[in-house]
Image (cartoon, rainbow, N blue to C red; front, top):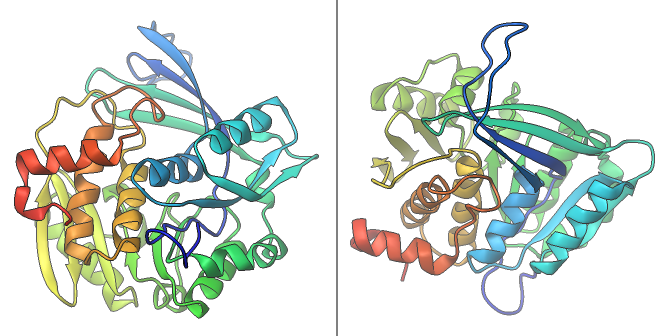
Length: 319
């Protein structure tokens, strides 16, 4: 993702782990030794960073990825797919000792998910890897990070991005304890309800508790927080607060909806939209993702997101 030429770019830094995905539809396994019959199974490649990078491209941004994959067949397939979609993978390194990560995703009849992951090579991402990617990170308008790599790598990417004047967006998954020093460098943090509880100790069950969790994160240093809650997303910043209800679409799989939200938020901010406009755009992108099974099948194009916003929230659509 370049910063100087073309449209304002979306930047993915700090390492996202690459993984192979196996999707199954059926009832959740709730007891040891229990056997469940599923309805169907499908194969996919990649999760958070990979899908965020692809989504960024489909939503109209130039994207680059900093990560590690194993030097195995899965890793090669993931890189080939990313290249085919225009993602800059020049800073995705191969690890000969660690395998490419794998995720097994179970989706029930209501579209809710359970995920078992083996992160693999990206657990080996180092501060040296981030330093090597410094030019790419510095060229981006937005650095989007998750917490599936060593925290030292996350912190190094944030420092590089901030020094270059990039906007820092943190998707805190999986949730870890975050220092106030780190949060003070984050422009927007976007946890879902489960992550918000892990980060703040506040159980998010409605709009009021989402506000409490967002306020907690802001008081600890974040400039703005968007907290997922039952029924929607709450945005809290110095400019005010508002709640975005989930858009009324026919949902079948929530897998990757949070990744879609984060990617769309980053793209919209990189294009110069204000935070409120970017959040509405992200809310629509996440809604579209839930209408299809699987993280890849549900990747929305920019025009699809704009059409959905024009249908339900015409006043909130980006210019």
